[in-house]
Length: 165
Image (tube, rainbow, N blue to C red; front, side, top):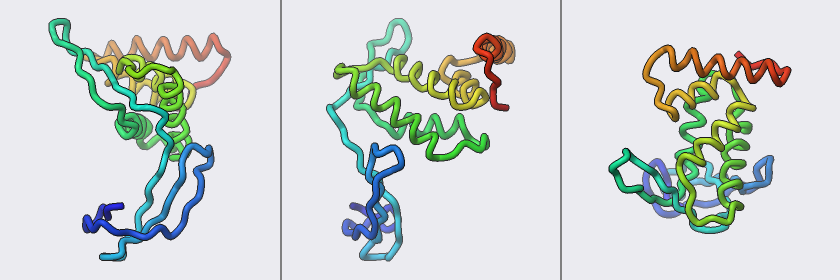
């Protein structure tokens, strides 16, 4: 494994253990060149998944390999400064990845992935849910936020739940 600090190609595994939800192996490594320590995660990949992204109405759909880290980055950004445990974020991302991999499809629309993430965030934290939705659904005005937040509040009241934040 290449060291993220000095780019040396050799590192030693110092500790291995499963993550709490048993979806990955967490490995602590040490670079044999610079001595830096870093963590890697090893996950099972059931099949190669292609994400289909649609552009404008006159654009051809683009295809790219599924990249878990993109979901992880956007969920982490939506949850920033919300006091949400890193483990909860990882569980949400793992759940979305499992849904995609067990769907049996070799291609999945980016729109479907966005909806899966929104479903997970809605249950995790209402503010993170609204933040993600604002980017995913391309809110342009404050009114867009107000209308969406109103639907979040209405759903929470109908379900008899309270929203975080």
